[in-house]
Image 1 (cartoon, rainbow, N blue to C red):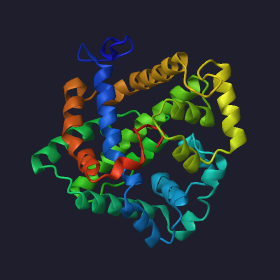
Image 2: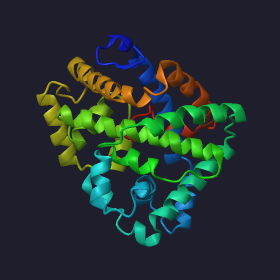
Image 3: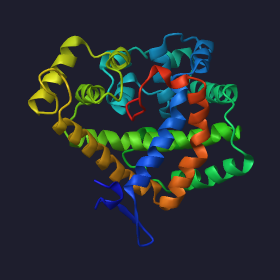
Image 4: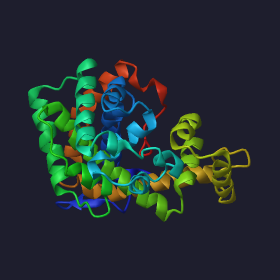
Length: 298
C-alpha cells in the first residue's frame, strides 16, 4: 500500500500529510538520535558519574529527563524491557542526580559528534532548528511521557547538541505513540520484542542481552505469537505476522502525522535531509556495525 494514500492521513491547509513523508522523517530522526547508545563517550561520561555497568547507565541517561523517578516508572515508559533489567538502575540517582546525568548525556553527544566530524553549516543548522522547533512547540504531549520530559529539558548552549536534543524529543514522541499501537494490537512487552527480532530488524542476542527476558518468558511470548499465526512453529515470522508488524508501523505513522503537521510534507522531508549528515558521519565511523536496523525499540 502506498502510505501517502492511506485514509488516516492528517490534513494541513487542505492537503494531506503524507504518511510516506512521516515514515521518512521518522527514520531520519531515529538514525540521527541512535548514536548516543553506541558511542564510547556515553560510557565514559557514565563512568565519571560512578556507574560503569552499561545497563543502569543506559536507563539513567534515557530516563533522566523524567527526574528521579523510581525504576517502576522507567519500566512503564520503556515498555519492552523486563522488570529485572530495569530494576538494575536502583542506585543511579544516588550516584548522581538526574540533572547531572542529563548534562553528562549532552557532553557525550557533543564529544561524539565532534569526534566523527558531524558538520552542518550555520545556515543549515538554523534552518533545521526552525523546522524542529515548530514541531516541538506545536506537539500534543498528552500520553507522551518521554517526549514531554525531554521537551521540558533546557537546551544546552552548544547549537549542534541543542538540535540533537530537539531531535530526541521527536524520536521519543514517536516511541511513545508506538507503545500505544503495540498495546492496541495486544502485543505485550516481551511479545513485541520477539516479533521484532523475528523480522530481522534487531538481533535476538542483542535484544535478549539488553532487555533480559529469560528463556521461559521468551518461549511463552513466542508461543503466544505462534497461536496468533504471526510466527510459525520454528519461530519464523509468517506473512500474517509481517503484515501485522507493518500495520502497527502504519498506525504509528498515522498517529505521528499530527506531530509533523506544523511543517507539512515539504518541511518534514527538508528536515530529514538537513539532519542526514549526523547519521552519515557515524555510519562512516563504523558506529552502527553492532546493530542491524534502527527502531523505536532501542
